[in-house]
Amino acid sequence: MGRVSNTPRGVSPTSFFTDHYELTMVDAARKAGTADRKAVFELFARRLPAGRRYGVSAGQGRFLEGLAEFRFDDEHLGFLSDHHVVSDDMLNWLAEYSFSGDIYAYAEGEPYFPNSPIMQVEATFAEAVILETYVLSVHNYDTAVASAASRMTMAAGGRPCIEMGSRRAHEESAVAAARASAIAGFASTSNLAAGFRYGLATAGTAAHSFTLLHDTERSAFEAQVDAMGRETSLLIDTYDIASGVRNAVEVAGPTLTNVRIDSGDLLEEAHHVRRLLDDLGNTNTGIVVTSDLDEYAIAGLRSAPVDSYGVGTQLVTGSGAPTASLVYKMTTREDHHCNWVDVAKRAQGKASRGGRKYAARRMDNGVATAEVVTTGQAPDWDTNHRPLLVKMVDGGEINTQYTGSTAVEDAAAHHEQAVAELPSAARRLQDGEPAIATVFELQ
Image 1 (cartoon, one colour):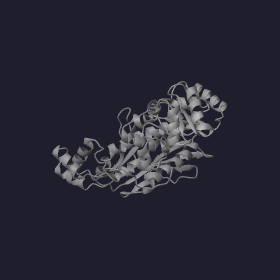
Image 2 (tube, helix red, strand yellow):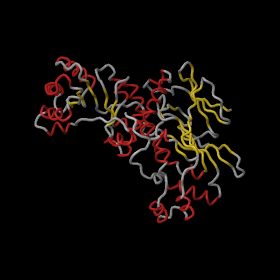
Image 3 (cartoon, helix red, strand yellow):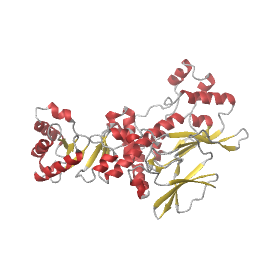
Image 4 (cartoon, one colour):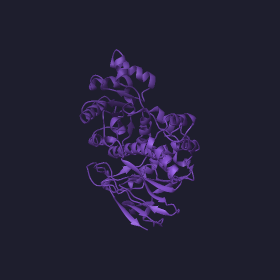
């Protein structure tokens, strides 16, 4: 993955990726004289998806790229006016909207746990609450995909994983999924838009239709090798796998890079194909497996002679957890005397914790032992604590270090290091409690 630039391509205005009531709340607050009270909103998950040992925060960079485009142009304002969504006064305010607050967040790729303060948005109530839907839609999806992708790359044990889920998702979700999976360790994607926008490595050769187009499997392989060279992957299961292997070897010879298996009992077929390739002299030809893989299937193939995995549907749908169930709640605000007041939701099963949060990972000889979250004064963390919140927006100015293609590469490196810090329990795919507990402390 090359370092290209910090400017994403293909970004359009994002202000209408929101819910109707976000605007009507601000309109009502403006009429009440409370819209300009400063407030802090927090993005967090009350719990991890059932059985998960950790989650992986992702989407911060995409959100910041969208925040730069979060504006209301004449066409959007005309829609709001024609449909009587908000008052004329509110329309005038929206016409001038530009976020001017601060945002702190976990680095992309950072593991998170129940009640981790993944992002904090500090601004006026009006400026912060209007972002709620967009914050949630970006982070809930990207975090779900990155969390699933991390389990898959961990199960793969160093063997490369290829993201191939574009045809199973909305076209923009497909780009987001490719980006999130790259952060969690996927080596490449089939999605060209993701490669174009974020500098991700793209990969792909041919599908079964290419083989079916030709009169014989052998002639299809000949056409592919003529066009792409022997550094390609030949799909060998359109008809009969054993015959496919023989045809691939006869056409491409011992320097063929890969064959791909997309059906059948992958464990059994991989062993069969490896033996046949070796017998035919193709000892250096690798085996790629696809076909509805998830982390459990990948783990089940650890003993198989598989060189890489192509993952689609299960990845882009979060492997059973299509949303991270993140919420965005106000935790503290100014009152009418400009004093800060901690606030919290108390609804049964949906409670939140008030107060501005600070977070760090407690470490013991390089291994994480707890997620420490404090309220009150900013703590002076000692060397046994790794602070987790970084400032991504300062007075409305977005730190471009966290956007674009270079940010994805940096996030992938951070994820690799941060996951390595987690205790061994994090690597278990069996249902269980979070790998480390979240501990709340008052400063």
